[in-house]
Image 1 (cartoon, rainbow, N blue to C red):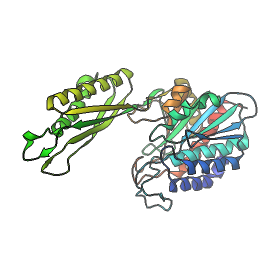
Image 2 (tube, rainbow, N blue to C red):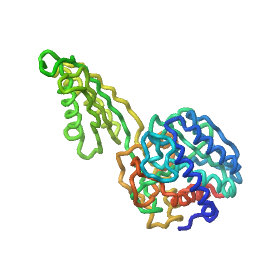
Image 3 (tube, helix red, strand yellow):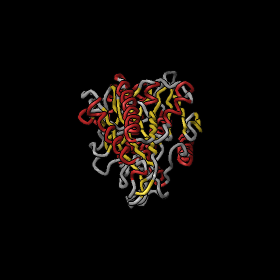
Image 4 (cartoon, one colour):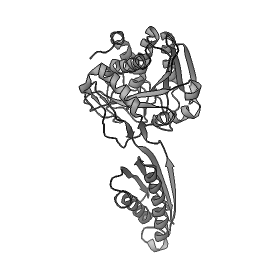
Length: 386
Protein backbone atom coordinates (compact mmCIF):
# COMPACT_ATOMS: atom_id res chain seq x y z
CA UNK A 1 0.00 0.00 0.00
CA UNK A 2 1.54 3.34 -1.00
CA UNK A 3 1.04 5.04 2.34
CA UNK A 4 2.87 8.36 2.39
CA UNK A 5 6.41 7.62 3.59
CA UNK A 6 6.55 10.61 5.92
CA UNK A 7 3.32 9.55 7.60
CA UNK A 8 4.53 5.96 7.86
CA UNK A 9 7.63 7.28 9.61
CA UNK A 10 5.60 8.54 12.55
CA UNK A 11 3.19 5.63 12.79
CA UNK A 12 4.57 4.85 16.27
CA UNK A 13 3.83 8.41 17.37
CA UNK A 14 0.27 8.05 16.11
CA UNK A 15 -0.12 4.80 18.04
CA UNK A 16 1.04 6.58 21.19
CA UNK A 17 -1.40 9.43 20.65
CA UNK A 18 -4.30 7.07 19.96
CA UNK A 19 -3.68 4.92 23.01
CA UNK A 20 -3.49 7.95 25.28
CA UNK A 21 -6.80 9.15 23.88
CA UNK A 22 -8.28 5.68 24.33
CA UNK A 23 -7.29 5.64 28.01
CA UNK A 24 -8.89 9.05 28.64
CA UNK A 25 -12.40 8.93 27.12
CA UNK A 26 -14.84 11.83 27.41
CA UNK A 27 -18.54 12.10 26.63
CA UNK A 28 -20.85 14.31 24.62
CA UNK A 29 -19.88 17.99 24.45
CA UNK A 30 -17.45 17.73 27.37
CA UNK A 31 -14.35 16.65 25.45
CA UNK A 32 -12.15 19.29 27.06
CA UNK A 33 -9.15 17.09 27.95
CA UNK A 34 -9.25 15.53 24.48
CA UNK A 35 -9.42 18.96 22.87
CA UNK A 36 -6.48 20.17 24.97
CA UNK A 37 -4.45 17.18 23.78
CA UNK A 38 -5.40 17.95 20.15
CA UNK A 39 -4.50 21.63 20.53
CA UNK A 40 -1.12 20.80 22.08
CA UNK A 41 -0.26 18.58 19.12
CA UNK A 42 -1.49 21.11 16.56
CA UNK A 43 0.68 23.80 18.12
CA UNK A 44 3.66 21.46 17.95
CA UNK A 45 2.93 20.86 14.27
CA UNK A 46 2.87 24.58 13.52
CA UNK A 47 -0.61 24.99 12.09
CA UNK A 48 -1.54 28.58 11.26
CA UNK A 49 -4.70 29.05 13.32
CA UNK A 50 -6.39 27.21 16.19
CA UNK A 51 -9.96 28.05 17.18
CA UNK A 52 -11.29 26.46 20.36
CA UNK A 53 -14.64 26.28 22.13
CA UNK A 54 -16.82 25.57 19.08
CA UNK A 55 -19.78 23.45 20.21
CA UNK A 56 -18.30 23.86 23.71
CA UNK A 57 -15.18 21.72 23.25
CA UNK A 58 -14.75 21.46 19.48
CA UNK A 59 -11.62 22.65 17.69
CA UNK A 60 -11.07 23.96 14.17
CA UNK A 61 -7.48 24.45 12.97
CA UNK A 62 -6.38 26.07 9.72
CA UNK A 63 -3.35 25.18 7.61
CA UNK A 64 -2.50 27.55 4.77
CA UNK A 65 -1.23 26.16 1.47
CA UNK A 66 1.27 27.69 -0.92
CA UNK A 67 -1.17 29.89 -2.79
CA UNK A 68 -4.78 31.01 -3.03
CA UNK A 69 -7.54 28.48 -3.41
CA UNK A 70 -10.54 26.82 -1.85
CA UNK A 71 -10.88 25.44 1.68
CA UNK A 72 -11.36 21.74 2.31
CA UNK A 73 -12.80 20.60 5.63
CA UNK A 74 -11.62 17.32 7.18
CA UNK A 75 -13.61 16.11 10.16
CA UNK A 76 -12.87 13.73 13.05
CA UNK A 77 -15.13 13.03 16.02
CA UNK A 78 -13.67 12.94 19.55
CA UNK A 79 -16.30 11.60 21.98
CA UNK A 80 -16.60 8.17 23.60
CA UNK A 81 -19.55 6.05 24.77
CA UNK A 82 -21.04 5.64 28.28
CA UNK A 83 -20.11 1.96 28.75
CA UNK A 84 -17.53 -0.16 30.54
CA UNK A 85 -14.55 -1.57 28.65
CA UNK A 86 -13.77 -5.30 28.74
CA UNK A 87 -10.65 -5.48 26.57
CA UNK A 88 -8.11 -5.90 29.37
CA UNK A 89 -5.59 -3.93 27.30
CA UNK A 90 -2.80 -1.89 28.84
CA UNK A 91 -4.28 1.24 27.26
CA UNK A 92 -7.84 0.46 28.33
CA UNK A 93 -10.08 3.21 29.65
CA UNK A 94 -9.02 4.66 32.98
CA UNK A 95 -12.51 6.10 33.54
CA UNK A 96 -15.22 3.69 34.75
CA UNK A 97 -18.36 3.82 32.64
CA UNK A 98 -16.64 5.43 29.64
CA UNK A 99 -15.04 3.77 26.65
CA UNK A 100 -13.84 4.62 23.16
CA UNK A 101 -15.95 1.82 21.71
CA UNK A 102 -16.54 3.42 18.31
CA UNK A 103 -13.00 4.35 17.31
CA UNK A 104 -13.26 8.11 17.62
CA UNK A 105 -9.85 8.02 19.28
CA UNK A 106 -8.57 6.56 16.02
CA UNK A 107 -10.42 9.10 13.89
CA UNK A 108 -8.85 11.93 15.89
CA UNK A 109 -5.43 10.32 15.52
CA UNK A 110 -5.75 9.95 11.75
CA UNK A 111 -6.64 13.61 11.37
CA UNK A 112 -3.74 14.61 13.63
CA UNK A 113 -1.43 12.52 11.46
CA UNK A 114 -2.66 14.28 8.33
CA UNK A 115 -2.32 17.65 10.08
CA UNK A 116 1.30 17.00 10.96
CA UNK A 117 2.16 16.05 7.38
CA UNK A 118 0.22 18.90 5.76
CA UNK A 119 1.73 21.49 8.11
CA UNK A 120 5.23 20.21 7.27
CA UNK A 121 4.89 19.92 3.49
CA UNK A 122 2.16 22.40 2.48
CA UNK A 123 2.16 20.90 -1.02
CA UNK A 124 -1.28 22.26 -1.77
CA UNK A 125 -3.05 25.50 -2.54
CA UNK A 126 -5.85 27.13 -0.59
CA UNK A 127 -6.51 26.07 2.99
CA UNK A 128 -7.38 23.03 5.07
CA UNK A 129 -9.83 23.28 7.95
CA UNK A 130 -9.23 20.49 10.47
CA UNK A 131 -12.49 19.86 12.34
CA UNK A 132 -12.29 18.05 15.69
CA UNK A 133 -15.90 17.55 16.74
CA UNK A 134 -17.44 16.52 20.08
CA UNK A 135 -20.76 14.77 20.70
CA UNK A 136 -21.24 12.59 17.63
CA UNK A 137 -22.73 9.78 19.71
CA UNK A 138 -25.31 12.00 21.39
CA UNK A 139 -26.65 15.56 21.13
CA UNK A 140 -25.14 16.17 17.69
CA UNK A 141 -21.98 18.21 17.95
CA UNK A 142 -21.87 18.38 14.15
CA UNK A 143 -25.23 20.14 14.14
CA UNK A 144 -24.07 22.61 16.76
CA UNK A 145 -20.85 23.42 14.91
CA UNK A 146 -22.83 24.08 11.73
CA UNK A 147 -25.42 26.16 13.60
CA UNK A 148 -22.61 28.22 15.16
CA UNK A 149 -21.56 29.21 11.64
CA UNK A 150 -18.45 27.07 11.23
CA UNK A 151 -18.81 26.67 7.47
CA UNK A 152 -19.17 30.41 6.86
CA UNK A 153 -16.64 31.47 9.50
CA UNK A 154 -13.85 29.38 7.96
CA UNK A 155 -15.00 29.51 4.35
CA UNK A 156 -15.27 25.74 4.03
CA UNK A 157 -16.18 24.67 0.48
CA UNK A 158 -16.16 20.87 0.78
CA UNK A 159 -16.06 18.50 3.75
CA UNK A 160 -14.95 14.87 4.18
CA UNK A 161 -14.88 12.28 6.97
CA UNK A 162 -13.73 8.70 7.61
CA UNK A 163 -15.16 6.07 9.95
CA UNK A 164 -13.43 2.80 10.81
CA UNK A 165 -15.33 -0.44 10.22
CA UNK A 166 -14.53 -3.81 11.83
CA UNK A 167 -15.39 -6.68 9.50
CA UNK A 168 -14.49 -4.70 6.38
CA UNK A 169 -11.18 -5.98 4.89
CA UNK A 170 -8.13 -4.27 6.33
CA UNK A 171 -7.22 -1.06 4.52
CA UNK A 172 -10.21 -1.09 2.17
CA UNK A 173 -12.55 1.85 1.59
CA UNK A 174 -16.32 1.65 1.22
CA UNK A 175 -18.78 4.40 0.30
CA UNK A 176 -21.62 5.26 -2.05
CA UNK A 177 -23.13 8.36 -3.65
CA UNK A 178 -26.45 9.46 -2.19
CA UNK A 179 -27.84 8.19 1.11
CA UNK A 180 -25.35 6.09 3.06
CA UNK A 181 -26.80 6.24 6.61
CA UNK A 182 -30.31 6.80 7.89
CA UNK A 183 -32.14 9.48 9.82
CA UNK A 184 -32.62 8.57 13.48
CA UNK A 185 -35.61 9.46 15.66
CA UNK A 186 -36.41 8.49 19.25
CA UNK A 187 -39.84 7.86 20.74
CA UNK A 188 -40.79 7.80 24.41
CA UNK A 189 -44.35 6.96 25.44
CA UNK A 190 -45.44 7.66 29.01
CA UNK A 191 -48.57 5.83 30.17
CA UNK A 192 -50.46 6.55 33.39
CA UNK A 193 -53.25 4.46 34.86
CA UNK A 194 -54.31 3.92 38.46
CA UNK A 195 -52.32 1.60 40.67
CA UNK A 196 -53.82 -1.04 42.92
CA UNK A 197 -53.59 -4.50 44.37
CA UNK A 198 -52.88 -7.33 41.95
CA UNK A 199 -55.74 -9.34 43.47
CA UNK A 200 -58.30 -6.61 42.72
CA UNK A 201 -57.60 -5.43 39.13
CA UNK A 202 -61.17 -4.14 38.74
CA UNK A 203 -60.35 -1.42 41.25
CA UNK A 204 -57.31 -0.23 39.29
CA UNK A 205 -56.57 1.01 35.77
CA UNK A 206 -53.70 -1.19 34.61
CA UNK A 207 -51.22 0.60 32.30
CA UNK A 208 -49.46 -2.64 31.28
CA UNK A 209 -52.07 -3.92 28.76
CA UNK A 210 -52.00 -0.47 27.13
CA UNK A 211 -48.20 -0.51 26.99
CA UNK A 212 -48.19 -3.94 25.36
CA UNK A 213 -50.85 -2.92 22.85
CA UNK A 214 -48.89 0.22 21.96
CA UNK A 215 -45.66 -1.76 21.56
CA UNK A 216 -47.36 -4.28 19.27
CA UNK A 217 -49.13 -1.54 17.34
CA UNK A 218 -45.89 0.32 16.68
CA UNK A 219 -44.41 -2.84 15.17
CA UNK A 220 -47.19 -2.93 12.56
CA UNK A 221 -46.18 0.45 11.12
CA UNK A 222 -43.40 -1.21 9.13
CA UNK A 223 -45.47 -4.18 7.95
CA UNK A 224 -48.80 -2.47 7.30
CA UNK A 225 -48.27 1.27 6.74
CA UNK A 226 -44.92 1.46 4.97
CA UNK A 227 -44.52 0.90 1.21
CA UNK A 228 -42.50 -2.33 0.84
CA UNK A 229 -39.78 -0.65 -1.25
CA UNK A 230 -39.09 2.02 1.38
CA UNK A 231 -36.43 1.36 4.03
CA UNK A 232 -37.83 1.69 7.55
CA UNK A 233 -36.97 0.41 11.01
CA UNK A 234 -39.29 1.04 13.98
CA UNK A 235 -37.89 -0.83 16.98
CA UNK A 236 -39.45 -0.92 20.43
CA UNK A 237 -36.40 -1.34 22.67
CA UNK A 238 -37.86 -0.59 26.12
CA UNK A 239 -41.05 -1.65 27.91
CA UNK A 240 -40.83 -0.78 31.59
CA UNK A 241 -43.35 -1.03 34.44
CA UNK A 242 -44.00 -2.52 37.81
CA UNK A 243 -42.01 -3.30 40.95
CA UNK A 244 -43.75 -6.25 42.66
CA UNK A 245 -45.72 -9.34 41.64
CA UNK A 246 -48.82 -8.35 43.60
CA UNK A 247 -48.98 -4.65 42.69
CA UNK A 248 -50.66 -3.14 39.64
CA UNK A 249 -48.41 -0.20 38.79
CA UNK A 250 -49.46 3.38 38.25
CA UNK A 251 -47.22 3.96 35.24
CA UNK A 252 -45.64 2.26 32.25
CA UNK A 253 -43.12 3.34 29.65
CA UNK A 254 -42.49 2.31 26.05
CA UNK A 255 -39.48 3.59 24.10
CA UNK A 256 -37.45 2.91 21.01
CA UNK A 257 -35.91 4.14 17.79
CA UNK A 258 -37.03 4.87 14.22
CA UNK A 259 -34.71 4.86 11.18
CA UNK A 260 -35.76 6.27 7.80
CA UNK A 261 -34.44 7.88 4.62
CA UNK A 262 -37.59 9.37 3.07
CA UNK A 263 -38.98 12.53 4.76
CA UNK A 264 -42.54 11.49 3.88
CA UNK A 265 -42.04 8.12 5.58
CA UNK A 266 -40.61 9.91 8.59
CA UNK A 267 -43.77 12.04 8.79
CA UNK A 268 -45.98 8.98 8.38
CA UNK A 269 -44.30 7.12 11.24
CA UNK A 270 -44.72 10.01 13.65
CA UNK A 271 -48.37 10.44 12.66
CA UNK A 272 -49.23 6.74 12.91
CA UNK A 273 -47.45 6.38 16.22
CA UNK A 274 -49.51 9.25 17.59
CA UNK A 275 -52.70 7.60 16.37
CA UNK A 276 -51.75 4.24 17.91
CA UNK A 277 -50.94 5.85 21.25
CA UNK A 278 -54.17 7.88 21.33
CA UNK A 279 -56.30 4.90 20.25
CA UNK A 280 -54.75 2.54 22.78
CA UNK A 281 -55.15 5.10 25.56
CA UNK A 282 -58.87 5.40 24.77
CA UNK A 283 -59.31 1.64 24.50
CA UNK A 284 -57.66 0.88 27.84
CA UNK A 285 -58.80 3.93 29.78
CA UNK A 286 -55.34 5.31 30.50
CA UNK A 287 -53.51 8.54 29.81
CA UNK A 288 -50.70 8.21 27.26
CA UNK A 289 -48.33 10.86 25.95
CA UNK A 290 -46.02 10.41 22.97
CA UNK A 291 -42.71 12.27 22.97
CA UNK A 292 -41.37 11.88 19.41
CA UNK A 293 -37.91 13.45 18.99
CA UNK A 294 -36.41 13.89 15.55
CA UNK A 295 -32.68 13.34 15.58
CA UNK A 296 -29.96 13.29 12.93
CA UNK A 297 -31.11 13.57 9.30
CA UNK A 298 -29.95 11.01 6.71
CA UNK A 299 -26.28 11.11 5.80
CA UNK A 300 -26.33 11.86 2.08
CA UNK A 301 -23.10 11.82 0.10
CA UNK A 302 -22.60 14.08 -2.91
CA UNK A 303 -21.87 12.08 -6.06
CA UNK A 304 -19.06 14.25 -7.45
CA UNK A 305 -17.26 14.35 -4.09
CA UNK A 306 -17.62 10.57 -3.65
CA UNK A 307 -15.83 10.05 -6.96
CA UNK A 308 -13.07 12.49 -5.99
CA UNK A 309 -12.54 10.72 -2.67
CA UNK A 310 -12.70 7.26 -4.27
CA UNK A 311 -10.07 8.22 -6.82
CA UNK A 312 -7.72 9.28 -4.03
CA UNK A 313 -8.42 6.09 -2.09
CA UNK A 314 -7.65 3.99 -5.19
CA UNK A 315 -4.28 5.68 -5.40
CA UNK A 316 -3.48 4.58 -1.85
CA UNK A 317 -4.89 1.04 -1.60
CA UNK A 318 -5.61 0.06 -5.21
CA UNK A 319 -8.84 -0.06 -7.18
CA UNK A 320 -9.73 -3.56 -5.94
CA UNK A 321 -9.93 -2.27 -2.35
CA UNK A 322 -12.31 0.64 -2.99
CA UNK A 323 -16.07 0.04 -3.07
CA UNK A 324 -18.33 2.82 -4.37
CA UNK A 325 -21.72 1.07 -4.37
CA UNK A 326 -22.01 0.24 -0.68
CA UNK A 327 -25.58 -0.60 0.38
CA UNK A 328 -27.03 2.14 2.55
CA UNK A 329 -27.53 1.21 6.19
CA UNK A 330 -29.83 2.08 9.06
CA UNK A 331 -27.18 3.42 11.42
CA UNK A 332 -26.96 7.20 11.82
CA UNK A 333 -24.20 9.80 11.84
CA UNK A 334 -24.23 13.51 12.65
CA UNK A 335 -21.77 14.25 9.85
CA UNK A 336 -25.11 14.45 8.01
CA UNK A 337 -25.44 18.07 9.16
CA UNK A 338 -22.13 19.00 7.55
CA UNK A 339 -23.11 17.26 4.32
CA UNK A 340 -26.40 19.17 4.37
CA UNK A 341 -24.40 22.39 4.60
CA UNK A 342 -21.61 21.64 2.09
CA UNK A 343 -20.74 19.11 -0.64
CA UNK A 344 -18.68 16.23 0.59
CA UNK A 345 -18.40 12.53 1.28
CA UNK A 346 -18.39 10.06 4.18
CA UNK A 347 -16.33 6.89 3.78
CA UNK A 348 -15.70 3.75 5.81
CA UNK A 349 -12.17 2.42 6.28
CA UNK A 350 -11.85 -1.30 6.97
CA UNK A 351 -9.82 -2.40 9.97
CA UNK A 352 -10.16 -6.17 9.51
CA UNK A 353 -11.82 -8.74 11.72
CA UNK A 354 -12.63 -8.09 15.35
CA UNK A 355 -15.42 -7.03 17.69
CA UNK A 356 -17.85 -4.53 16.24
CA UNK A 357 -18.06 -0.91 17.26
CA UNK A 358 -20.12 -0.29 20.42
CA UNK A 359 -18.93 -3.66 21.78
CA UNK A 360 -17.14 -3.72 25.18
CA UNK A 361 -14.20 -5.63 23.65
CA UNK A 362 -13.75 -3.37 20.63
CA UNK A 363 -10.46 -1.57 20.00
CA UNK A 364 -9.34 0.59 17.08
CA UNK A 365 -6.72 -1.06 14.87
CA UNK A 366 -3.68 1.23 14.99
CA UNK A 367 -2.34 -0.26 11.76
CA UNK A 368 -4.95 1.58 9.67
CA UNK A 369 -4.11 5.02 11.10
CA UNK A 370 -1.35 5.75 8.53
CA UNK A 371 -3.75 4.72 5.75
CA UNK A 372 -6.46 7.09 6.95
CA UNK A 373 -3.99 9.92 7.50
CA UNK A 374 -2.54 9.37 4.02
CA UNK A 375 -6.03 9.48 2.53
CA UNK A 376 -6.78 12.83 4.15
CA UNK A 377 -3.44 14.28 3.10
CA UNK A 378 -3.59 13.02 -0.50
CA UNK A 379 -7.18 14.22 -0.79
CA UNK A 380 -6.06 17.78 -0.05
CA UNK A 381 -3.02 17.59 -2.34
CA UNK A 382 -5.08 16.08 -5.18
CA UNK A 383 -8.07 18.40 -5.02
CA UNK A 384 -5.96 21.53 -4.46
CA UNK A 385 -2.58 21.03 -6.12
CA UNK A 386 0.08 23.61 -5.36
